[in-house]
Image: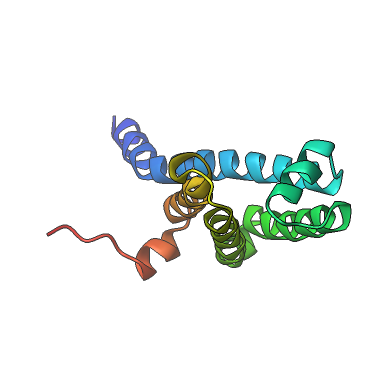
Length: 139
């Protein structure tokens, strides 16, 4: 009976890590898809970039490369926090670009904030050292 209760306690302590990897996995899949679309310089990416003031295929591929590197750093556990910080900068640039272009707030401007929230929630739940560094305190 003791092993069953230990197993239940172990699973109860493991849920933040599992949810964290689920959130991180969703963010990684989305960011990887976005970077591949930019690296391939798909017409929709180049056309949309032009409306935002970007200069064609070379810019799309450069942004795709930066995003791919940041995403790989985030996906690899030893460099995940560095990747999250770099992704925050990248997504902040996306937010600023949409603000400058005058795009709708909830669907375009804040989309980078939504993705960033997934990135940070995921790493916060899967990385106990980060939870120690940035504790959520009960009042």
